[in-house]
Each structure stands twice: as C-alpha cells, then as structure tokens.
Length: 101
Image (cartoon, rainbow, N blue to C red; front, side):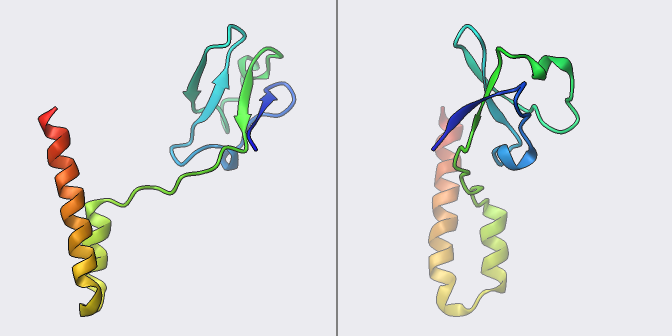
C-alpha cells in the first residue's frame, strides 16, 4: 500500500524510485509532481517538514522495445518466432499510430 513519507523523516532512495528514477512529490498546497530527488540531491530543500514523497509505489516493468524483440528473435528457436513476429508488428503499428497525431 502506498503512503506519504515526510522528507524530513526519510529521504527517498533509488530503490524507492520508479524505473525512470523519479518519485512523486507532494507540496503543501496539495499539488504534486514527479521528480528525481534521491542520491546526490541532499539539499535542505528536500529536508523540509512540509514536503512529502509517495512510498511503496508498485514498479511497472520497463516496456520492451523493438530492439529487444529483434534481439530475442535472432537468438530464439524457430517455434517461437511467430510469437515474436506478432510482437514486432504490434510495436511497429503503435509507432505508426503515434506519428499520425
């Protein structure tokens, strides 16, 4: 279950961040944004009592790229290639759909 943690209680670590290295930050005015705020950013700004970050956010797996699928295709057995060809076509179609907008 996700919960808000005060920056002054504990700073987020890389393990708390998402795959892009970001955490969700809550400001005193109830606005929120996504920011990298762990590791070298040890400034006093992050140790404020009125700032919170969202902990225990489930990590999503990194989406597969066309390169990932092609790499698997080139190193896999013949019986799995049709499955990988289907995945390649889906990735290409999504890319073409995004170019239209």
